[in-house]
Every structure is written in structure tokens, then in C-alpha cells.
Amino acid sequence: MSAARAEPVIPASALSARALAVTRGGRPVIAGLDLALPAGRWTAVVGPNGAGKTSLLMALAGLLPHQGEVRWLGQWPRDLGTRGRGRLLSWLGQGEEGAAGDLLAYDVVMLGRLPHQGWLAAPSAPDRAAVEEAMRRTGCWDWRHRALGELSGGERQRVLLARALAVQAPLLLMDEPLAHLDPPHQADWLHLVRAHVATGGTVVSVLHDLNMALQADALVLIDQGQIYHQGATDDPATHRALEAVFDQRVAVRGVDASWVVLPAQRAR
Image 1 (cartoon, rainbow, N blue to C red):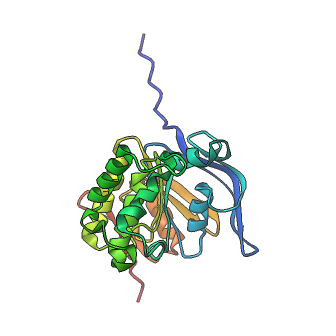
Image 2: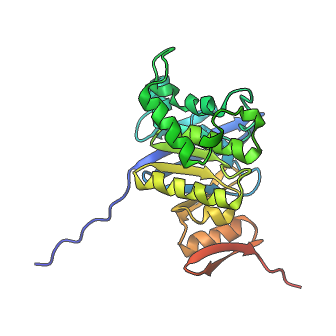
Image 3: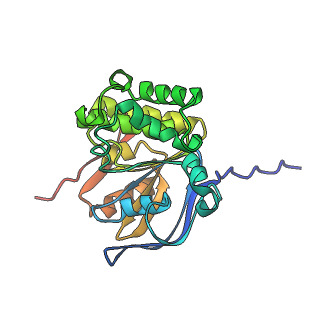
């Protein structure tokens, strides 16, 4: 008797949406889409300008009014309470680098520990340890006593990334997290993402840098508020879809066992 073939292991959904719709300024930007993102993976969301990428991510994070259903690790966010939601999902958004400019960098990162603290409670030893670890991992510990407004754009972005990491949430959602980061610190960000996933965490990031997006486990391609394609980054079908969603103006090519996006050659 031949041995039964093992069924493939399908990761549980970390984030799922059903009939998700978002309207902004009286205009529909997300049009009733269904989505399931696996746990323990890094998914990059890409697409043309105005495709609805940020709106999708904010709706998944519960930061934008929407219609339809969203679940985090199989749970309804509304049932978790404010503190429960804060412990389960951490957010890094666009345009936050100018916020709270008078706060010290250390205090900004400590804000990430609020879901773990009692009302008006002083930071605990675990809180202080989590903040120091996050700041050291993002390379911003040395300016912990400087005001956020005194830092450069790249330095502020690293402080805000440290705040997101200090939450120690399993779900980490980031909208354009590479803003203001130079290439070495972009590489550091990539290592941090990989480390989070290696411990079972889930990362979803909106990225304009298509080459960095191809380092993810999977891509979700968005166009006109709909999912154009969802698939593994090493799948040729994903590469063809990526080229198509950008109107054949880019080309995916293999280089040294990796994939890169290049400008497509135009016919003369």
C-alpha cells in the first residue's frame, strides 16, 4: 500500500477582509475586495499612484472607516478592546515624522508600550527593556535624549520604526517605511522585517520601491481599488502581473538568483 500523500501546510490568515469597501472624499477608493494574508509571512502591497494601497492598509489596521469585514488572526478587532487591539497590531504610517516634535526620541518610542501599561501607570522594567531593545535594533539609541524635531528625516523615521517594534505586536503594518532612509538603513529595515517573520510575526508593507518589494514573500498588486494579482514574489505569473499593472513600463529580470525591476526598453 502506498503511503498517503501529505497535504500541503497552508498558513492561517493573519489578516483577512471580505467585501471591503472604502470611500474617501465621496469617492470609492477600495471597491468591495476580498483578501487573505498568511501569518508568518511578509507581504508587500504595490501598485500605481492612487491605486488605493494606503487606504487598503489603513482599513486593515482599523484606522479608516470602511464597509465589509476585517479580521486579525481570526478575531474581530471590535471585540478586542482598545488595549487588545494595540497589543495585536502595530502601525507605522506615512507623514508621522513631523508629529510630536517636542518629545524626546525615547519618549516617542515609549508610546509604543501604552497598550501594555495600566492607566497612568509608570513604565515598567519590561517596558524600558523593550524600548531600549527597539532603539538599539534601529540604531537610534544614541540620540534617545534628543527631541524628535531636532533629528533628520531619516533619524526620525528610525525612531518611529523603533516605536512600532517596541509594541512587540505579532502584526506589523507599515506604509512607506523606507521614507528618508538611505540604502544601508534600508538594508537594516529588511533584516528587522525578516527577524520579525522568523519569530512567527506577520509584516504587511506598502512600498514604492519595487526592488525592495520583490524581497518579500508575496506581493499584492492593487489597481483602481481592486486586487489585480496576489502571489509569491518568485512566481513568473507575479512578475508578469507586476509588469502589466505598471503598463509594461517596467521589466522584471533575474540577477544572481534574485529578481530586480528595471525600466522597460521602449521601441525606437
